Each structure stands twice: as C-alpha cells, then as structure tokens.
Length: 130
Image (cartoon, rainbow, N blue to C red; front, side, top):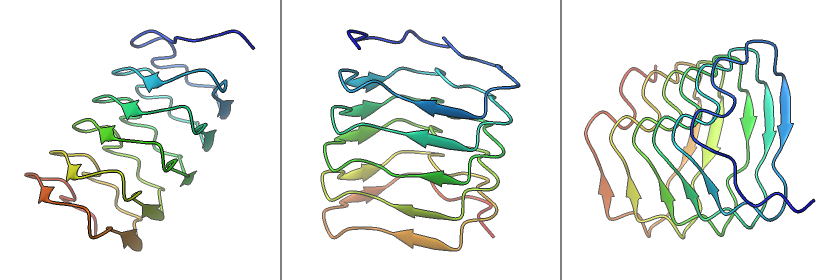
C-alpha cells in the first residue's frame, strides 16, 4: 500500500467498523481518527507509527486488544478514553509521559505495564479504571 496519511476523524463514528489494519507507511494516528467506532474490536498498529494523537480511539467501547509498537514516542490526551473492554495495556519504553485522560474510563483494565522510562503520569490518566 502507498497510503501514508489518514486524516483527523477519518473514520469517526463508523459504527459498523470491527477491525482495522493500519498500512505500514502510516507514521501518525491523527486526533479522533477512530472516534466512537463503537464496534471496533481489534486494531493492528504497525511499527512505523510514532504518534497516536488525542482522542484517536475515544469511545471505541468494544476495543479489546491493542498492541502498541516499540516505535511509539507519544500518546495524546484521551487517546483511549472510554475503551471500556480494553483488558490490558503494555506501554512501550519509548514513551515517557502518560497524558491526561489517556486510559480514563477503561473500566475493564486488569493489567497495566508501565515501563521505568515513564517520567510523568498526568491528571486523570487512569481515572475510573476499576
């Protein structure tokens, strides 16, 4: 694939989207790209992705599994907020900050792996993850 960019809110509220494989040349998942894709269960993020911007997966209630690549250097605020079925998250060592609200209301989280490279966990990063 020669796709190198997916715009902001490109798939926002695509309520029937269940799975997405991001092409290998994409370097950033823009803000609100998959905003409220309520049936999205699985996403494959390639190692080319360096940034996940704010609200990228906000409200993807059925997202169960996501693997963050080791190439990732930043995750924006509320990127995974309200991903209510997300069970575990392994943050790669390339991340130094967990932004505000990143995993807020991920109420099914039972396992979180925070590497020693994390220097800051901002406000409400894991609020209501019970």
